[in-house]
Image 1 (cartoon, helix red, strand yellow):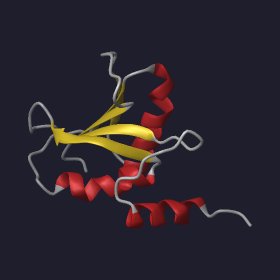
Image 2: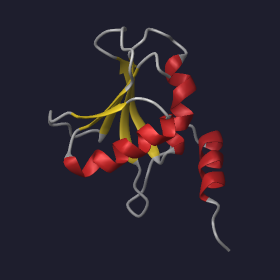
Image 3: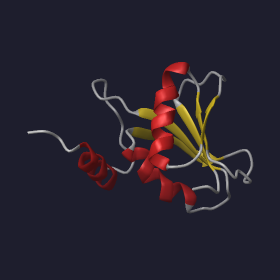
Image 4: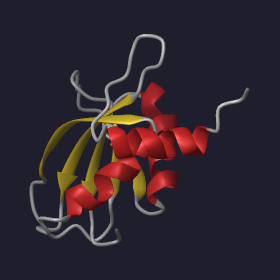
Length: 115
């Protein structure tokens, strides 16, 4: 038998809204921030983020609410591919290197009005 990865991702998102990875199957740790002031933004986008093999570990508001373009910021070079994978899953946004040292997550997504 072969696992249908797309079906697996859909089932995980439906059954476990905020899954955690394991040592043998790590998930990208994501901080998901609303950059628009739309209270429904994060709940609408979270399943797509989780479906892209990520765990949302922090949810909050961005520094302001006038982001037009979603920013997918990676904090270490080894997380660039994960940020690009998330951009592909979201179908929007720009990948940005953010060199501030962060230990509790791998990628920050600031939601803009393009989503």
